[in-house]
Image (cartoon, rainbow, N blue to C red; front, side, top):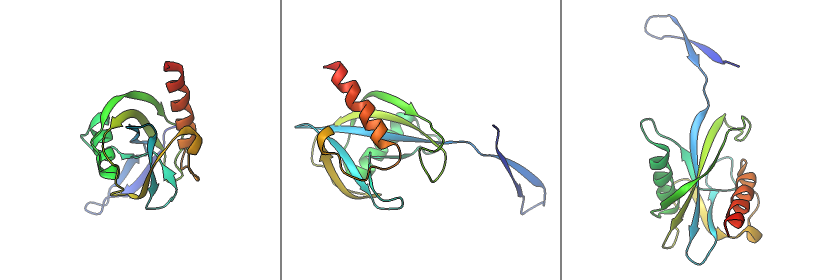
Amino acid sequence: MERKTRKICPNCGSTLEIYCNPTPTVDIIITVEGGGIILIMRKYDPVGWAIPGGFVDYGESLEDAAVREAREETSLDVILEGQLRTYSRPDRDSRQHTISTVFMARAEGTPTAADDAAQIGVFTEDTLPEPLMFDHREILSDYFRVTKEKT
């Protein structure tokens, strides 16, 4: 289904067709020393617990976006360990259609909430907080299943 919208050029009055495409995002599952993963409490709507992540900037690789978003939201420098999966269900984010590539990473140090994060915490599969935003419960379920299969 190709979706377009029409806008009028303010300079010449011509009708422009603009394509509506999904927006690329990244999420980063960060493991820390001593076990557990970092989740953030989102500062802005929709508010809830989430995997750190965000939008990919124009001209930025997915990997660079993951490292940048992790630093912006957790104040940690991460080492990417690979991709978990890409999630693309059109309704995964109520704000707009996004496609998220999920990275697995590790970090050392103490996470500090920054940028879009109001709070930060370290959680295990058994201590996940509520509410989890977007499709992050599905993503974390996949993550914990994959990490168990590796051990």
